[in-house]
Amino acid sequence: MNILFKNGNIVTMDRNMPKAEAMIIEGNKFKYVGTLVGAYEAMEDEDYKEVELEGKMVIPGLNDSHMHFLHYAKGLRSVNLIGTKSIKEIKERMYESIVNRESGDLSWIEGEGWNHDYFEDVKRFPTKFDLDEISETVPMLVMRACFHVGALNSTGLKLMGINKETAPQFGDLVEVLPDGEPNGIIKERLLDDVKTKISTLNLEIMKEIIIAAQEKAWQQGLTSVQSDDIGYTPNYDYDLLFTCFRELEESGKLKIRISEQCLLTDKISVEKFFEKGYYYWWGTEKARVSCVKILSDGSLGARTAALRSEYKDDSTTKGIEMFTQEALNELVLSSHKNSCPVAIHAIGDRAVEMALDAIDNGQRMYPGKSLRDSIVHCQITDEGLLNRIRDLKVLTLVQPIFIDYDMNIVESRVGIELTESSYAWKTMMEKGIHTSFGTDCPVEAFNTMPNLYTAVTRKNISGKDKKVFLPKEKMNMEEALRAYTIEGAYASGEEKIKGSISAGKLADFVVLNKDLFNLNDEEEILETKVLETYFDGELVYKL
Image (cartoon, rainbow, N blue to C red; front, side):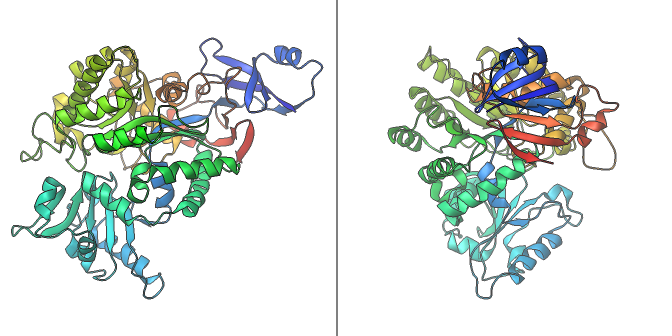
């Protein structure tokens, strides 16, 4: 039976019809969007039921253009270290986890979410010496909020084969003491490898945690996510991941759309991926391949983001370049050869420059493919880099919520001049760059209203005093919602089937308790609640 939703304040994100008061759902798609009179005419002589929207605001289902959904789901079982104010507090929380587990359980314990910049005792990374005070028998890994730096205890180091003799082969990815002995701190690709090696996920656990995580996503109005998940499976097992998605969909339990940003770490793994039969847009409307993900540098908070110049607050480093330019070029070429776009994680200006050089090379070597390559994060930029992004038609997948923390550190890291031209999302849009919103969850929570708030106000959420960061980059609400809906669909190549409330598109939409275009105060954005979330025309969440 068809469903008529009437008397709504429907913001469609469709420029051919920006507003509507009624819409009809047939099956899992919008059949009609427009006036109520037109809706009744369209439903003449047909069976239907009516749903009264009572003037409430309706928007398309929100789309997080870059996150780590499986990591978030898995993290629901990890020790929560978010908000810890000291290394002492990290130790207390980790110790509590050990005390509460079964006697004799020597399996790995993972904690995540600490940020040393918030520590009130010493502003440093925890080390094996700190963790060894908790346990010398239970292996432990605690990860910084950015997930580019982590620390192992001595047992964990031993199990991973990281010691004085092997440390040199990892270069800057392992911190060592003056005598060459590892201090427990590991970074970037090595941390990723450790995470996959210690993963306890199997098919049934993955199904269970994804079902739990999608319910959390509905509460935020998320009906689509573009997610980097392969690195959180045991030994990068993407076959297991896609089997999980398929079986969940076949059982009718997958009720969120996942566009997989496939993290592949070298040319051989990229080629093997395509040889096994995967390709761009492989999959279904609920789970498909959208790009090859490449991690080219680290994070600003950990000073591993690759900069052109030395860090202003640490002249000994320019960050970490995960690949040489030649190796990065090869990765992009391998993906382009198979008609698949790339999404390159690049935070520092040097990393952005290298990403653009690799994409430029790929476009010249395989002209005419018109692939939607993107840069994930794209934080530290200048006018020249932004113009190159525009000219190469590269997309940007940005995270407004990042400024809540980064506004406190960016100037000290890169200087005032480079700060002024960074986090430039308004400028990107004005230049015609396709820009979409994500959260990088679980680096940040995937809560949608704080993300909109920081984009529109450029204000912080945490802390005692409100500050405005680079106010010239404030976006208006229409721009911000576009970045969270239709632009997100464009980023995964799916704008023809979702991203707006338009006849023929998938019926994913959200009902809000406030009109985001008519608020008395911008602080009300943070008070806005999702009342209902619909996926495939089905009510999956109700407040």
